[in-house]
Image (cartoon, rainbow, N blue to C red; front, side, top):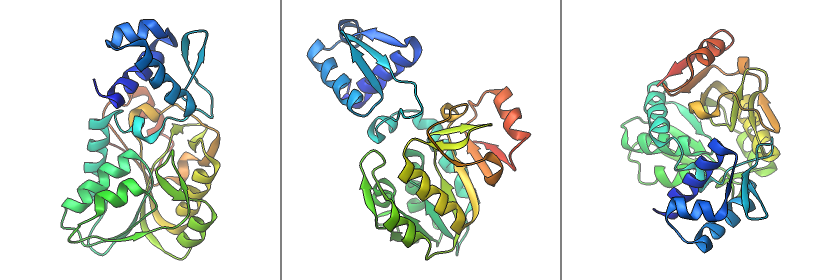
Length: 254
């Protein structure tokens, strides 16, 4: 089992069980206690978990955020389905903005492979890397203060730069989507940059896998009714789907 797969497995166990003994985790995953301790130290450093007297516990507060490298291995096929569906929302001549996130990275891969002649703005290093070498899409990279957890540039420099442009479609990402809490994230700078992006975009499409629904975090970016289209995967709970369908402008299952 690779490092990221192992850390994803640890988070999966903790999400289901709430806590687990370090030695028990090592035995279940077939690695040494030393390896598990290194994994837990990294996860704890990112704020995902806490460790107390040999027991790992999942943090469940509004400030809990997984590292982007951990997110990369979560709901991969669902994110790819969302990305494929989002291609239908762009056409030749469009200007689009790709927000930071692993779903946006999957979308950037498809944009590079497509024959759509568009201009892509982004502040995400993941998206920029995937767009490199595109024969049809031109790319503009935003400046700003680098945030390691997002692998993207944000903050006042990014916000001022973004305000110079009019964006046809913003492909927005998020940490949580909740009927009352709206679209929310952990980090204030990330949330503020998302807010500026929404103000500059003619249309806002939220890309959010079903695991993000029913969750609310520290910084509220926008209420649900300010989102033009929500694109999620077919695993979304049916009751949740109908609840969101009644309040949002459009919700699409990919």
